[in-house]
Image (cartoon, rainbow, N blue to C red; front, side, top):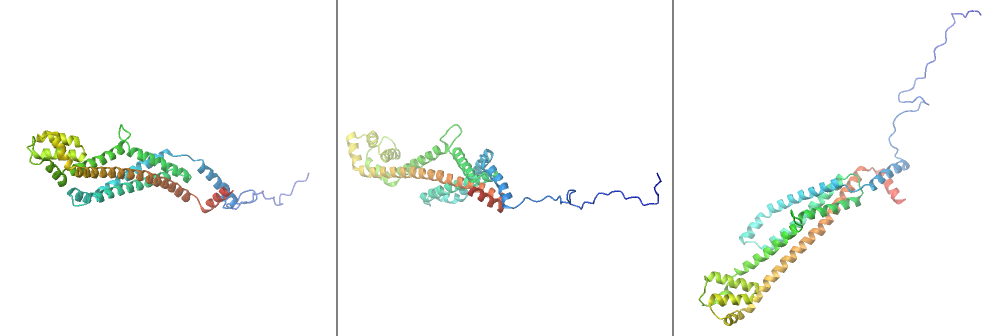
Length: 313
């Protein structure tokens, strides 16, 4: 075979086509990562998945415990603030320059207000800390927080009556104090002096007057007659006759004591009832608001629109 002419130009080696920056080798398609589609179909599918995760969520006990402690802390802060503000009013009440009814009403109002604010703050914080949960679940967590909050306040170490027992005990103690103040009342002292008269007493006059007045205020006619007969040396019949002369006055005083006692117990009961019911409502509202706030902040407008479409379908 004849040799090829070496002077002929040699063919150029094949070179792969240059791919533009940001393009792929197949069809020169750009390999740029596209953002999630905002089309109704894609957004609808994306939000459906998120909505399903939200609907399948459960109660977050860690958030509930945190909400209870936040509620207790808020309650302690508010009650301390109320104690500081009401100090001047209490000083006037102790000195006798202010009306006790106004002081008690203000204390009850501040107590209920502190409970409402504390439970709302704790439940709202629990709803925010729970992540993406439906509002109904946030409300449920708020109800659980209210139950635990009141359970702690109404309980003692080793007892189940706690604050309720203390509250009723304080109320009855206040009633007893009111009865004691009636014993020292000038009108009651005058009745006791009138019954004793000029009789010679076995004990000091002050002791006899106080003992007789105490029995008269309690409505213990038999005990008062026996005590008067022993201290003055008169017969039981004469003691009954003297007490009969002041029967109407003693009955009126006994009715006053009973009315004040019933009013105090009724006020304490209604205050506790209002605190429980309104506190539960505030806690449920706070839990739902916290969960709803988290949902609104974590979803875009297109997500919300897709959620509405899914719920309407």
